Every structure is written in C-alpha cells, then in structure tokens.
Image 1 (tube, rainbow, N blue to C red):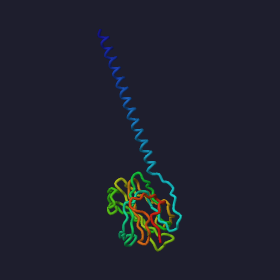
Image 2 (tube, rainbow, N blue to C red):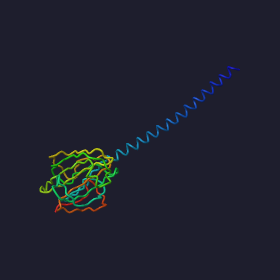
Image 3 (cartoon, rainbow, N blue to C red):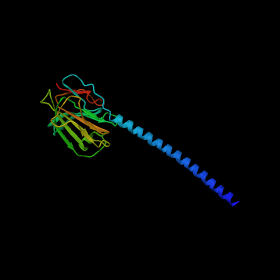
Image 4 (cartoon, helix red, strand yellow):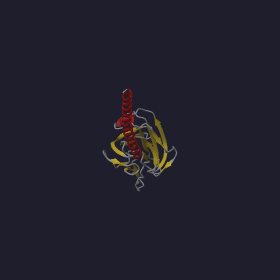
Amino acid sequence: MRIIFWTLVLLVALCSAGLMAALLGTAIVAFSSVLVGAWVVFVLFTLYFFRDPNPLAPTIPNAIVSPAHGKVDVFDEVTEAEFMGGPCKRISIFLSVMDVHVQKAPVSGKLVYLKHKEGEFLSATRSECADHNENVLLGFEPTDYPDQRIGVRLIAGLLARRIIVWAEPGEVVNRSERISLIQYGSRCEVYFPLTVKVHVKLGDRVKGGETLVASFD
C-alpha cells in the first residue's frame, strides 16, 4: 500500500509540474508576443519619424521657403541682435512628433553664421521656449540678395534632446537642400528682413523646402 501511495504522490507531482510548465510556457509566449509587437511598433514609428521626403521647391528666384514641416503659431516683429543685427520679422513653426524633422535651407546662399547655445528643454509647444531652450542659430546670406540676411533658429524641446547640423559654416547651399535634423518634437524660427513679404499666416501648415513663406521684393 505504501508504494501505491508514493507512486500516486509522484504522479500528482509530475502532473502538477507539467501543468505549471504549460502555464509558464503560455505566459512566456504571450509576453514574447507583446515584446515583439512593441518592437515592431517602435521600428515603424522610428522609420516614420526619420522619413525625409524630397520637397517640390518653388522655381521663382525670390522665394524664401519654410525650413521645417509644422504649424505656424507665431508671426511678429522682434529684435534679433546676434545675426540679423536688429528688428526683423519672425515666424515660428512648431514641429510635433508626427512631423518631418529634417530641415531644409530657406534660400540659396552661404551659411555665414552658426552658433550653438546650451539651455533648458521646456516643451516646444510653448513659443517662449526659444528664450530658454537649447538651440542652434544659423545665418544665411542669399546668393541673389547678398545685402540681405535670413536667420533660422533650431530649438530643442521636451523630447528633442539633439540638434544635428549637416551644413558647415562657409558652405554654399541650395534652396530646399537638407541642412539639419532635430530629433523629436521641437520648434524652428525664421528671421526675415523687414522688407520681405510674408505669405503665411497663423495656423498655416507648412512643408520644409516646399512651402513659400516669404519673398524678397
């Protein structure tokens, strides 16, 4: 009778171990499926975020195109002393995490100014973040209008912690040529001479290297 009892105990133990192994295996398979799904979503989002479509640049010679994809949420006159040297027109473009984050040259010309400034990482949804956040100021002298200046400020945001500038000081770039990348949600400001005509308004959606935002007289 004792041998029957202990064989029964062994049988129950083996069955229990098999059941636990089956349940654990099911849990591992389910967890692995979640991990694979999350990885696929991450890969698709990364590929989507770093997309870089070729712009359809305007052909008119006096065009100034938007350097960034996004929404115009500021249009005013400010004093930009670092590069513009005084009063100028400004538009500010908010780039959400769903927008293209590769920036394009607003004009054909030489990059004559590049300055990186350390700062905070406030949310780029706030237009005043330009006064506090880490940013890079680029200054261009247009080839066809050498007496004019166009400034572009690339501003990091809450998620955007890295600004990569591909253009080098002294380099001549073509309008709509790729010049930089801001990783994740950010902001881009454009400074124009007071004499230019601005063609966008608050709330407009713009495309980098493609949308006509202003023109020289």
